[in-house]
Image (tube, rainbow, N blue to C red; front, side, top):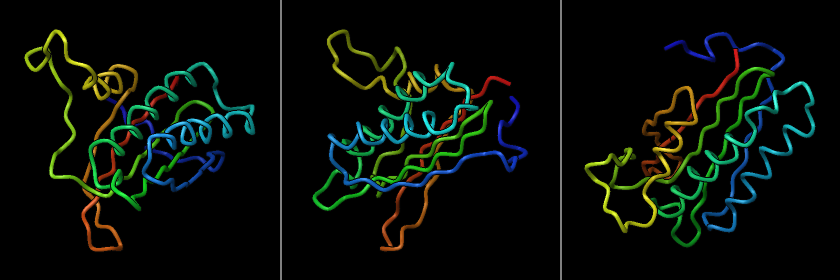
Length: 150
């Protein structure tokens, strides 16, 4: 699969934000993505709804499943947007678990939740995660996705 960001043009827009690790801040993460699109009419709005869904899922996962959701926790958001592609990274403060897509074999008929990464996988061109060292000496994780129209 092609790498969307192999060449980072100078026309790209970057935004970095940090939010408190609470579920009400998921809306703030979505708002940040919307603000970038509103302020940059050259960005392709055809996939904005997909971006908002994926940001919601990753930010909510960071709050629900990592130390970012503990009192005083933080969630980072890094957005790199170009008129034909975007990469969004959600940075959490770490967890003992590694993100994974729940497959049909893991699914229970009455299970609520647990399908967020499957949505990200389906709506993105590429997604992944990697550990990151935090300034506080804790281990965090970056979960990212890329989506484009080119």
